[in-house]
Length: 297
Image (cartoon, rainbow, N blue to C red; front, side, top):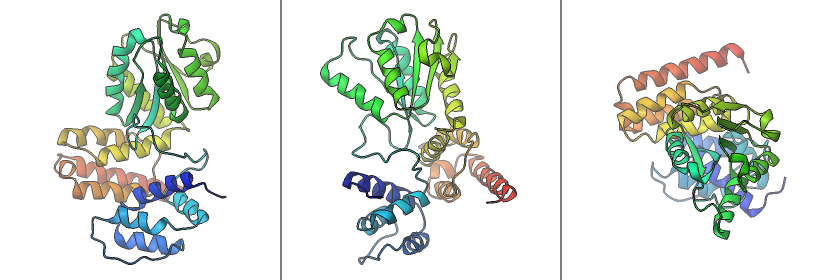
């Protein structure tokens, strides 16, 4: 498989981000096994990301592909080219929220609640009649999202834009869901899973969506990666305690997670000092390793 320059940059960045979190010895052994030439220079203990970036940048296309698969990249979808749009939060599941402008306050509150679960939500709440720049942002978000949820408030179907947003996402075959708020799912979206949003707060709905994405076959791997990254970046004892709960609910497990989670406990004082969290991390790792040993390769 021949890679374009943009695809090479995407994979190089991905490999550096994931492999750069490992120990120096494992990094060197891994790169050696994949035939990546050594480089000179003096590197400090904190420069693992830069070291991997420098070392793999001249690797062949097949070596990059093999390395990307080794660190967990899934090639069941086309390799994304280009620079990520700025409105997506790094390392999070990308969710497009289709909504009416009249319900933008609720959509914004939902966006905040989803962030706490490792989900980056795109919420467009500008003018009803969009400008050209607004349309470009909408199209970019639709082209790069990993799932879409439609908030079916009354008169949703009458909008000039919401049906087009749903059609765009369905054309890309990304998971598409609806939340009923007075409007019944219609057309093609009527075939897909719908949530009853009546009487639920944005936090309630965010938790239901997280539960859905951690189970859905198309999103569960991405959701697991997002939650692990979110846990690693915990900035308070309370965040660490909240996020370990999301980790414990995951449906899939990657071999890189034990090392990453133990490193987070060791180097993030907010995780290490959060009462009960380090023990829950070890219990969770034990559970997954035991399950893996029982099921075999």
